[in-house]
Amino acid sequence: MLDIDMRRYRVVDLSYEVMPGQDDERPFDMSLGRLADGTFRYDITRTHSHVGTHVESPWHFYKAGKTITDFPVSAFMGRAALLPFSLPEGQLEISPSYVDAEIGGLLREGDIVIFHNAHNKNLRQGQVPDSALKTVPFVTEETAVWLRDRKIKLFGFDILRLGETVETGRTIHDIFLSRDICIVEWLDHLDELDTREFYFMALPFKVRGIDSGVARAVGVVERAQASRARRAPQ
Image (cartoon, rainbow, N blue to C red; front, side, top):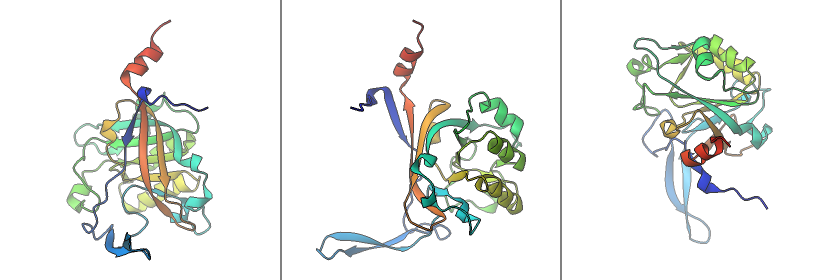
């Protein structure tokens, strides 16, 4: 019988909380209704597939690409390496050499990579003016290639620009999605992770033919006491 001792682990909710009615660019509008038996339901009257924490599939860019339901659920969970980047003042570019120095020694083939922005923690979805957007660090095309060539299986982040411009952003999406590396956008609470290595899950809503699925993301980390006991010399 499978028995996971949760006294040894801590589960961190890494999902962005969507607030209905507060965002026109990424809306989530709903109205109260009733089912046939008189119980309550909510009708979702306006939203789209990129609201809140969501997982983007190749179908987001390619009509012949895989959709969310073409991937096994194992594609959205696994061992993860966290990079909580803190760049020198005035520097916004996240280079391959920086990523290599920070997590290169941790990465294994098939890992998930999660970037955490310690610079712009107060920015919220749909509330990022152009003036603030220019202060958000960005991944370069070379960094995306570096991650792709390390054969990661999933890439996620909280607040980050994929490229400095819209054009480079499309190129970076292509670098990942053309290799079936899905992208998890708008994570939250990554500062609650106290380790660079953890177990990550972001399971998207299962809708056939959709390009992106809203997901509830979590991180599972070893509690400090259990970790020290495991690493203690015998």
